Image (tube, rainbow, N blue to C red; front, side, top):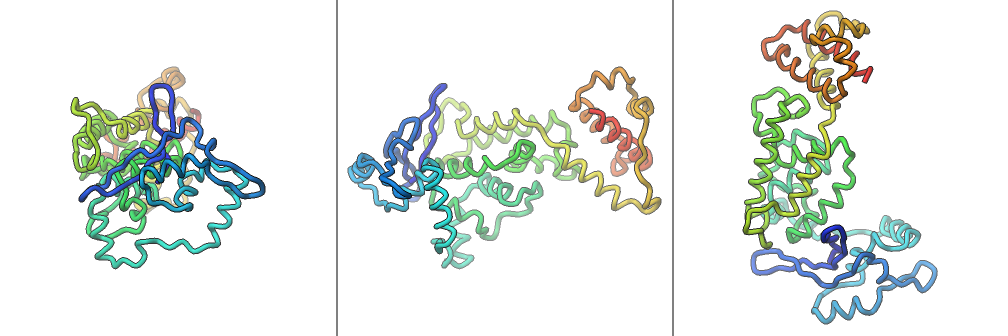
Length: 336
């Protein structure tokens, strides 16, 4: 069982749901509408004790749901009184939690994970590891995927949405870039794992292409009804909003450039990047000081990205020119 937040127009409500097995497919069903505040269904007799209002158990019994008190506690946990929740967290840290998959062999576990969609695999890998270069996630079992096993598509999305709340703003767009495996569109590109250095229009175009492809993938929506008019499913609408509401961070490219210099710095190892006057730095990019002052930080980054692609040594450019351009960029960026 799990509590699913359902948005309706400008409002929302919580639904108590259950995943169940239907032949060879995992589906979900609504058990009870809990309104806007599930906490209203929790009673506190005193101390650290609590119990759920009778109508919840009565509803579950009427629907023939097989559940335990721990199942309800887990579902309602975020809505418990903070003090009670803290006590339960301390208790759970000292009790042994047995994973139902612990006794499975690698072959058995791999067989169960075969049903997981590649989009789920890539999302979980980034959320657990935080890497754009995901390598090959196929051909072997991964323990971090066990949390998605025997769940309906709706419960999988619920689980991942909760984990996505831990993403920092500068990680969001990079996360979606990785989850949709957009680096596959730049197989030989030097910056395929550093999307801030790629053509933004091409990246946006590939993002929309992959999102539409996923929207038409019946395997991803297995066990669910897909809109027949071809409109974007709400599960994916949120990724469109997340993608265009955030930008790629410059950190990945900055780290790449530093690593690039470290590997190629055969001479002048103790040389410190000198400070370049604004006028001189602007000349490197062929702009006036007035133009620079009117530019936003984002526009400066785009200008550097365009110039760096032409001057990059791996693209036939001159090493010294690229170094000077990067020094000028860092000096100008510091002023923004």
